[in-house]
Image 1: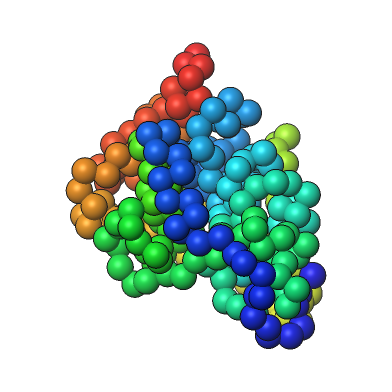
Image 2 (image 1 turned 180 degrees about the vertical axis):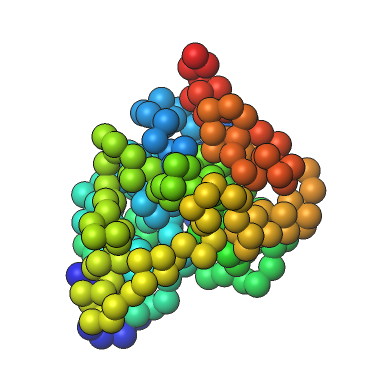
Length: 263
């Protein structure tokens, strides 16, 4: 489903003021779609879960779906989010919305539509979210505005595992998928645009040999530099975080510990 007209949303969307301090004192988990997300189960819902992009396929009961990528939202997750009661937190342009105040059938009262500003300094009084290299950086700011602490990263591996970039490339995982060397999202994008994409078009941050990435890591470094004292932990692994913790950018945590069922 792709809106053909550029129209402004007439319905009353949520804004950051509506959720400011809503979850004060509770832990939040910002979930990306990296390989470590495959270890997560429903026990993660004890925390405030913000499912970023494809992570929603793994965590369909998350109270928040987050994306800064209009193509990702509109091609992959419209139907999924419409069928739930989650808050759809997006930093999308007006043309993504329909004139009747809905986004793909999601009523405006469930849409948290926020703008971004080019900075990494976070304030709980902010009316805009930071602009980071990935949706994960921006989602952390949303958790911060909602008063969450600590904040854990899961599925934000910042590297491949066994040559795999996403959790859904592993067996017995929901969502996504690969065909002919392409992610299914790439195939839908090619069908929409009529343009051929290189199979590794979106792999510039992810070296298949498992080496930690560059630009995404720089974003996490900058976030911590601008926000000293932020209680943010890398739990993208079973043995004390992923590449972000391994490189000393964030302190580490363990997915099993975060879910409260240490094996």
